[in-house]
Each structure stands twice: as structure tokens, then as C-alpha cells.
Length: 448
Image (tube, rainbow, N blue to C red):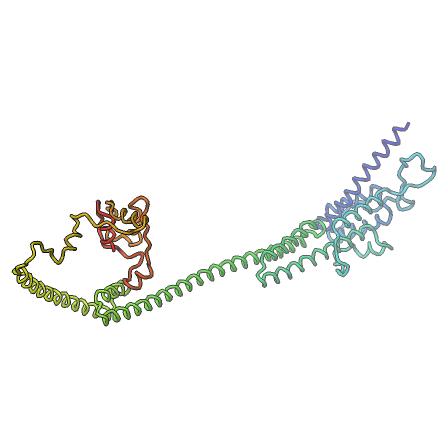
């Protein structure tokens, strides 16, 4: 015997669950405009006998509203006469402990109430000041027969609150996104729009097709505007960077041109100063450097021709002077050779030059410390300097000479002194060919 009540309870619970699901599905059909399916579902819920009388009257109001739109139907939608004349049919009591004669409450009522409360708690997160938004309501006939809010009204009211919340979220997102766009904060604007889109997607069933599409289109248009603004901003930044780079190049060229003109003026002044000092070769060197910077400089070209003529005439005059001197020396030596010396041995006056000839053994240093003696020995060594070339910088040539012996020759170059007195820099070409075998002293003297 205990198996029968258990089986009956399972059947009742299963049927009740089906009616609850049909009720909510029919409400969704009604809100999305599928009135035929909604009407069929309402009729089946009414005829199930599992709903309270007030809910049945409310559903009758929905059916009447649908019939006013679609036209009357020949299907019986009212409660059965037996249901209208007598109280709601009682369900069999699955609990054996219930007293005999006690009436059971239809189980659909607490189930509907619990489902409504669960949906509201899961989706409702609204500030208190947001007013409810009106949505589609039942017909006036249905409202007149309900003396107190029905479960359907509670669902509609909560759906209205959710729709109002979604509307407020979308409006706030639009305002914030536009403000962020005006400030150039496009990432924050996109974040706000994405958050609002998430709320709309989550409340899709509560919004209905029309509101869902409207909010979605509004947010999509705003997202496209943000993307376009970001692209425009990126384009402006690229143009600004190109403009800044062009301006920087222009300023650099102007600066280089100014430095070039300053260098030309300085070289011209140096050339004229050397000319006054009759250092014509040094002046020509300054002019050659100037013409390398500005080959069409008229002043430099004229002065260069003048200096070249002066150098030529000066060399010619020096040669004539040397020629006269040599002629006078010959006459003197001739007269000197005719002198009858009384001594048996007479040393020539240029005996030191004769002693210092390469063919003679050089004088050894006297009275020097060991370090100086070692340095002189290194200077007397024969080294290979074939790596030298006329275009080699002076600093590189010094390094080659220094490292041509072992240990390396201790050479200190006073670059500042060379620049001030001889205008020699580390990059100055040596104008000297390499020598495969030469004494280090002679090579250093030739290089200097």
C-alpha cells in the first residue's frame, strides 16, 4: 500500500512542474508578440485545475485581450462550470500524516511565487531612486476582476524594474562614454560600453525583442563612434609625429647651415691672419678647408690665387738668394783652399757633420741613466714601417711607431701643443710612405 501514495505524489509534482514551465513560457510568448502560442498555453494552464481562481481570472483577462486583437476563437477558455461553482479542486495529499478532511493548497502558487522571487533576486540590482518603467499590462477587464496584485502583476512589475535598470545603465553608459571620448580616454569609453552591453545581454529575456534590439543598436553605434574616434586620434598623432620630425629636420639643417657659415667666417679670418704674418702656406691650408665647405666662395678663391702667386714669387726669390749665396761660398772656398796652412794636420770646420754621417758609428750617450740608455737602444733598432701610408692619420702612425719595438716605445704626444703651434690634429694625414727597413730614430724624425 505505501507505493501508491508515493507514485501519486510523483505524478502530481511532475504535472505541476509542467504547468509552471508552460505558464512562464506562455508569458514569454505574450510579451514577444506570439499571441497564438500564448493563448494556447493560457488555456492549458486554466484547464489544468492547478491554479488559484484569481490567477485563472487574470489569465482569462489575457485571453480576452488576445481575442480583441486576433478575433474570437471557438475554443472554450473559461473555467469549467464545476470549477466556477465550487471551490478549487483539492489535490490528493501525499503526506499520510495530514488530518482527514484537510484541504490542500494548489502547489503551483508557491512554485510560481518562488520562481518569481528567484528571477528578481538574480537580475535585480537597482538604486532606490530609479522609477519603474511602464510596460504592457493586461486588459482593463482583467484588472477589474483582481482585487489585489496577482503573481503575473508581480512578474510584470519586476520585469518593469529590470527594464528601467537596463535603460538607466545604457543611458549612463552613453553619457560616460561621450565624456570619456571628449577627454580622449577611449579605453575607458569602450570599457563602459562593454559593461552596458553585458547588462543588456544578461537581461535579454526581460527586455523583449524590441528593447533588446534598440539598446543593442544604440550601443553598437556608440562603439563604432569610439572606434572611429580612436582611428582619427591615431591618424592625428601620426600626422603630428611626421610634422614634428619634419620640423626637427628643418631646424637641424638650419643649425648645420649656421655652423657651416660660422666655420667659413672663422677659416677666412685665420687665412687673413696668416697672410699678415707672411705664413702663406698655412693661409693656403685654411683656404683649402674653406673651399671644401663652400667651393663657390668668391673671397676664398680670389685670396687663394693671390697667395699662390705670392708663394711662387717667394720661392723664386729664395732660390735666387740661395744661388747667390752658393756662388759666394764657392769663391770663398776657392780662396780658402789656396791658404798655405802651417800645421801638418788641419780638421775641417764641418767635422761634426762628417762624424754624424750614417756611414759612421754614432756617438754613444754619456752620463745617462739606464732608462734613457734603453730608450736610445730602441731608437737605434731597425724596424718595419711598411704599413704607413700618406693618408694615414697621425695618431694611428704614432701607434704603429710605438708598437714597432718590444717593449713598446714610450711616446707621449702633446696634442694641444701640436694644434696650437703646428695645426696638427689626430686625424691629420702624415703624407709619408711606408718604409720596410729603417732605424726607428730616423723613421720618427721623418714622421715628425
